[in-house]
Every structure is written in structure tokens, then in C-alpha cells.
Image (cartoon, rainbow, N blue to C red; front, side, top):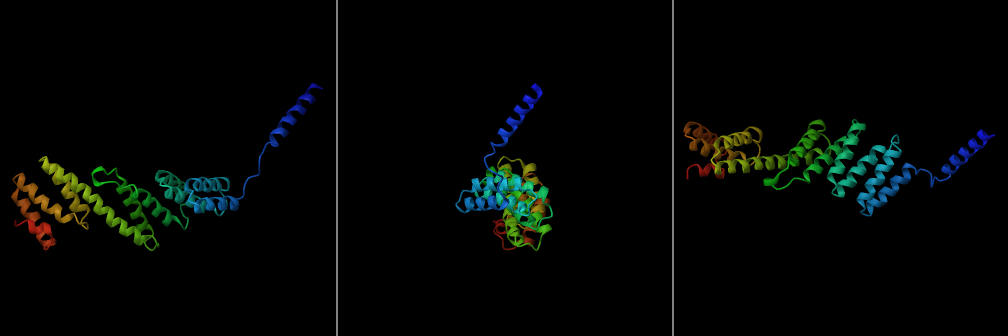
Amino acid sequence: MKKIILLTAVAAIISGCAGEQIEPEKTMEQLYTEAYDEFNDGNYGTAAEVFLTAESEHSTDALAPDALIMAAYSKYMDDDFPGALIVTDRFMRFHPGHMDVPYVLYLRGMCYYRQVSDVRREPGMSVYALQQFEQLVQRFPSSEYAENAKNKIIILKNYIAGKVMYAARNDMKRENWTSAITRLQNVITTAQETVMTAEAMYRLTQCYNAIGLPEQATGYADMLRKNFPDNEWTKKLDK
């Protein structure tokens, strides 16, 4: 008899817990609509969370990849770039062959690009952004985002070269010629298409003359005259 009473009590508790469920799970369509409403109202943080809820609760739904993309974009719009990158990581892990991979690569690049700081305090975001945009162009050259990515690549390469040039100039001020030469040669070999190349050649002539190697200095001077005959740095050689 005691066993029967105990089982009855347990059943009552389970039944009571079941009755505490406030509402049934929302459908993907309901969550998606709710998230879009929040997004359109400019509530990007809230929108991102609802999109993520939609994806986690309906991960097998056809709209699940789109929910992740919208969650990432919402975080991007909310200036939560680290959060957006985490969401795009999830997308790339679970949907590597999705048709929107080019856009996700572009969005990842923009997350880093928007965090690029002053050339004197560069934390490395420019390099990460460059990697994403280059991957996009290499893997999806016909993508609608490829042309924009190419423009960003040019900007970033000039930016990175500018950072190296800034450090090289400081080395020269401290007469740290070996470090300056290494940096300047790096600009010439890895950033030939940037606006910094001519200055790098000019600075190398200064460095080699400073350490008593006129032949090397003359070699870079000749290279500068040949490749940039009308450049302002070429004209400085004869002043």
C-alpha cells in the first residue's frame, strides 16, 4: 500500500511540473519574424539573440543557416564585431558548402576591417581582414563581393606597408640601420603594388650610405629611377 501511495505522489509531482510549461516552442517562422521586427526597429542586439534562438531550436530547418547569417549581421550592425565573428565561425563549421559562404567571408573581413586602428597603434586587425578578403577573392573570384574585396585588399596592403614604413622611419631616427633595412626590404618584396615602394627604395639608399655601403645604395637608387622616374622620392635623390 505504501508503494502505491508513493508512486501516486511521484506521478502527481511529475504532472505538476509538466503543467508548469508556460508556452509551447515557437516555430521557426514565428521566431524569424520576431527577429526581423527587432532588426527593422534597430534593436540589433535583441534581433541577434532571437535569430540565434531560432537557429538553435530549429537547427535542421532550411532557414537555420540564414538565421545564423542574420544573427552575425545583426551583431555587426550593433558593432559587436567579436560576437559576429563567433557566429560566422559557427556558420563556417556547420555550413561550409552553403551558397552564402562568399558573403560570410566578406562579413568576416569587414568585422576585422572596421577594427583597424591608427597606423601607430595597429593591433593586427588589418592582417586578419586582408586574409579574409584574399580568401574570398581566391575561392570565389566571380562572387558579387569579390570586386569590393579587391578594393579593400589594396587599401589594407597600403595600410600595412604604411605601418612598416612608420616603424622603419623610427629605426632610422634611432640609427638602428639593420632593423630599418629589414623592414624596408620587406615593403619592396611583399608590397610592390603599394604607394610605399618608392619611399622604401629611397630610404634604403639612405640606410646603406649611413653604414658605408655606397654600392648597395646606388643599386637601390638606380632601381628607384628605373621604376619610378617621375616620383617625388626619385626627385629627392638629386637634391
